[in-house]
Image (tube, rainbow, N blue to C red; front, side, top):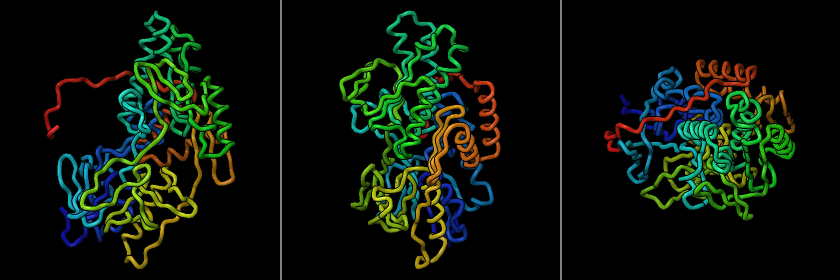
Length: 429
């Protein structure tokens, strides 16, 4: 039941920024409605582990309704739905199921895959920007291995066993490293009919370095780590098209493969804005001021990956990482909980960057401090465990990681496809 004396604060997106805002904002001043397309919060830094059979999906997901029942979220309600448009003139948010009015609106919808205008690419590549996408990717990787184990045609077998990862950022490096670990440590034991040299893992990056945003030492360590895992690294190479099992690159080269995993870029989630001339900027990000207010809109804010706040230190906006979303959510919560004349501008505090390449292989940059190898891997592990929601999830993930660490096997390589029937005929879908 909503309190008519309070303002209604609607938050679109239950990611890091949206949940942190909902937890910290003054509940005595607002009735809070959280809207998300899923009924669970998920942990994007570990999508690659689901895609590579390292973790089960439930280990990195947490139900919104259970989380919102806790004391720190008292006064928050949840509505499942995908926001299709926002009418700023009458202050309403529209999903495929309902219309939700608001007094104040926070857009924390995050980003989705960016295919850079390559025609029909989204129909042919696998992505890992959500839990369902990661599950699909896992199933297809396992499917290729099972089919290759039965295939006698050399050319067809080679296509089945060639895995191309496009994008040399953290997600690309991590999924390539996971596939490299599979090739090096697991293939011979679980797929004895497939020779190690038959499985080919490639990572393709358009710039001249992996993990370019993290600095040259991390780039060099990532290159060395992937090479040790027998991953072929191709730098300065961009994809032009992919169809019919053939990836074509801008330099004219081609690779026959049935599996392309796309991690090359992101763009803001597409939400139509009505009743205003305000439109998203570069990367479909919404331009905001130093208080996270969307420029040109009254009572509308944006935080996290979808927000574009241009400052002297970050002329192209803040990094699209969890820390920026968490900090913006916390700052906006404090501001909305006090008189406007006491608002504080947002100042991003860079707490460092990290990426894992495989067992005992990771890179960490914190200010001028650089770590790699075993120490970096344990640091990466601890930070990610601390950030996961729910003690059960933390315990399950830790046990899985320790089991895999000592046995080189997560035991989760289960190929489970959803049934097609019965067809859905409810909720107007």
